[in-house]
Image 1 (tube, rainbow, N blue to C red):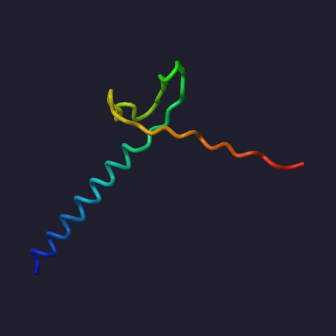
Image 2 (cartoon, helix red, strand yellow):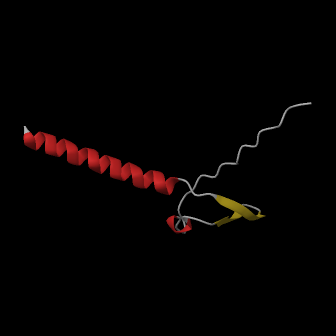
Image 3 (tube, helix red, strand yellow):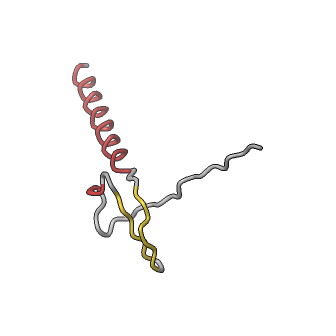
Length: 70
């Protein structure tokens, strides 16, 4: 019984550790500095070392909400 519990705890710790690393590397805030055809140059202040040359990234535009009023 204790081996099953230890195995379960180790599996949960591994899952949480892997999920934490993937979430940390998932979001990097950058600013577009230049666009030339299909080439986009980004300037990242923090966590830029998590990106490697040739790695695939997904870029999303920051949502800007309109201010309504009189």
